Image (cartoon, rainbow, N blue to C red; front, side, top):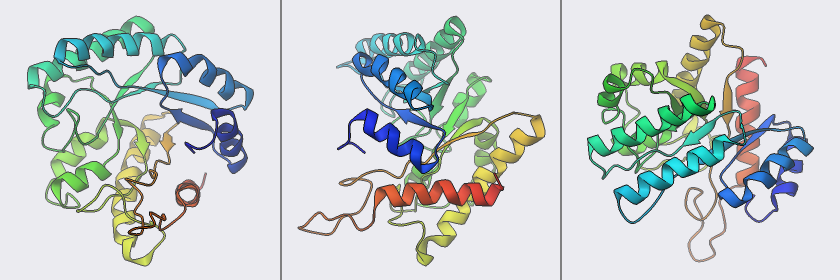
Length: 258
């Protein structure tokens, strides 16, 4: 999708049957993103990251990014909050920023489970749950599978607490040695797919029981080079990223009869 302009990407996404897009763009491109989504009848999730040479700079930029992004009134903001190398106290300050901006703006802010963030592993996030009873997540558990080098079968309690706090899903499928399987359609990855799908089922069932009207899911198998494996020397992707993400959408629609 990176090779396409945002307008062309949105048209392609709409034609494929998606309901919206989750978009990571700079603050200077957010107005354009909002208009393009409106023009194509797509709902919009925006992202925020922060950044800087040190913690004070990072915190200031994180707040600025969140406040500016919230002004566009996206469906919600998916935040890449903190760093694994920040102290517990520093990450707590950043989580508090998300709660403050959420309260002031009325826009929901979710914190993505992701390598390199405060939420980089299932055990690492547990202390934050205690400190912040209202902490809510975007669940991309492929990262936790990778970090733990397991499918987390020995962390049932940690996973249960995380699933209770997850309000948005990134349906990437990871494996113990990587955050993304080469192709979730392949027979060798069916166990990995089913493990992740059962976590997603749990989130959906919790929401159905609570009468929540909607569960959002981003099909987020990532690009090459990087997430998507490539052949040596030629850097040819081993599979079509687009086809895999469309498969994931249809897989969940079929599984959930929606």
